[in-house]
Image 1: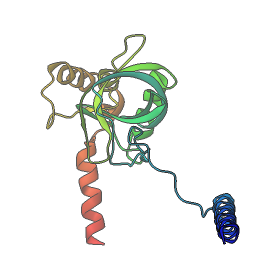
Image 2: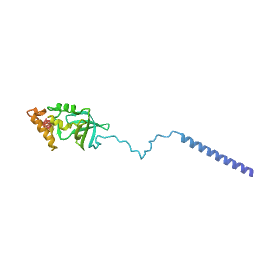
Image 3: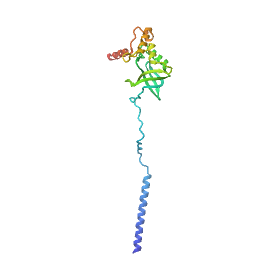
Image 4: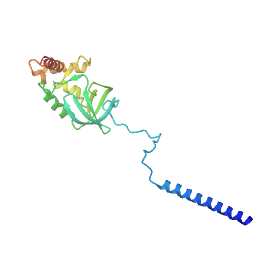
Length: 203
């Protein structure tokens, strides 16, 4: 009877070992199977990259860069920190491109600063077209805002500016009859734009 009992105990232990071996084999095989792809867990210390939207503009006051494009007499693109920034010259207004002397103003501005390093001084604010409004001075010391007014290729924008230097530059250009002041009846760009808007509304 003891021998039979020992034999049954051996069988029980053997069966248990086989069951454990089978379970271990099953777990190992399932673990090696290809798991479905899941997105990697996010690292809380790494901030996700966000695309730069048009409305997300840099706040800039004084910066230096290269003029890479002349849009018209008073609007340039300045390359700063690898990104172009559109700059609108402050306190002056050049004739529009399709207006008399508009192309002259663009060419004069191009001769002054295209391809040159300039310093832009602004308040950090932008206009409704996301342009920086500022003063542009070339690396050889030319104040582009003032130079355009002196050449008679820009008006002093008195509605937005009380700058006495620009006012004096415009008065002198008028007296000398240079640039647009050679015209018998020069039309200010803001008046010209308003006339264009009114004419379109009547159509």
